[in-house]
Picture (cartoon, helix red, strand yellow):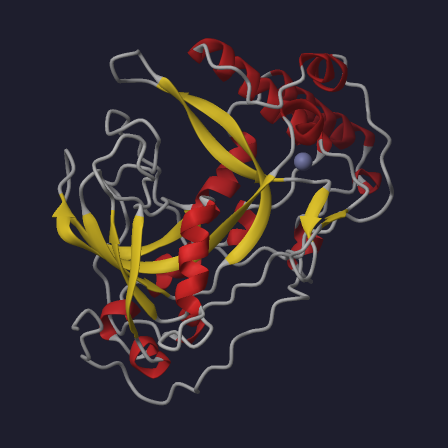
Amino acid sequence: MTLSDLTGDDNTNLSPALRRARAAMTESSRQSPGMKIWIERSKALGFEFYLDSGSSSAVIFTSELESFLVHRVKTRWVKGGPNGGFPEHQYVSCSQFTISEDGSQWDSTKTPCLYCAVIGKPKAINVAKIYFRYDKPIQRKSGDPIVDGVKPLIVWQPEIVNTLLDSAASSVAGGSLLGCRFKVTRSTKDKSPRIGDSWVLNKKIDEQTLVTSKELAKYKAEADRIKFSTAFAPMSIEEQRAALTMHKAWSDRSGDDNGLGYDGEAFERFVTRRETPALSSETPAGGWAADTSLMDEVPEAGGLTEDIGASSEVPALDLGDEALVETPKQPAKPAPAASKPTTTEKPKSAPVTAATTDADIWEN
Ligand SMILES: [Zn+2]
């Protein structure tokens, strides 16, 4: 038996009563969508790496960048702050376009995407798993200060992506971001990116040192919980309708527009009146699942029992620290039986034979 045997969504097997139950749940989710469609995706991404204004951090890449074509959608209302609250955002994969193998164009899956129709074209983002250590630990309202950890990095700013790629092309980096350590600073300028506006490569940690690092081994479970293929799994048309319904509600509530490419008529047609765009029977391409990650090689920390969860952290939100939204810590889950990577090679890596070491990967 495989996981998909346990999670099939084929209705033909079901008795009429159960088919009715499933249809009722689907309709209920549509009428009152809540956060259901985001739960697994949020869990698989976790808290994004971010810096407070004026702060700095060391960052080591433990995976290469991976690219996704996504739409940015308002997912829920976060109470608090001087304006009484604000919408939280999430990225969701486009179901119509994917990035071609060499990246130079968008391929069509021939499956329509309601986001494309209603809020405009997707944009490319790049994600990676990074191991960070703040220069100055961040003290939150409750809990221990945040010193270091492993988080997903999400980069969409072209200038930062280019800086990272130029750094990777240097002789120091040797063509790969794996093991590259950056000094990252976020300026106090208005609208400085929360992932920092200055990324300076200062060292390449060799792979053996990294995968045998005791410090990094503490975060193996945390790193394994980050599943980009799940976080950016394309949605069904029905899920897209539910998400767009929320997106519009939160946009209206916050007085925002619905995004630059918003088309109210398309919303009426495809969401309100539930018209179905012509659907192809072709399987959507979703093959961005490769975890090109050093963390696969990092052994579990022996006997580690302390809580390394981010229980008191603030999620990466756009609008400051007012919103303390905690995500309950989730037990590690088995990987979903998701699409297998087809285009991304696993980086060659030295076999790990040594036990973990005390080598300080933060030393200069
Ligand atoms: Zn789209």
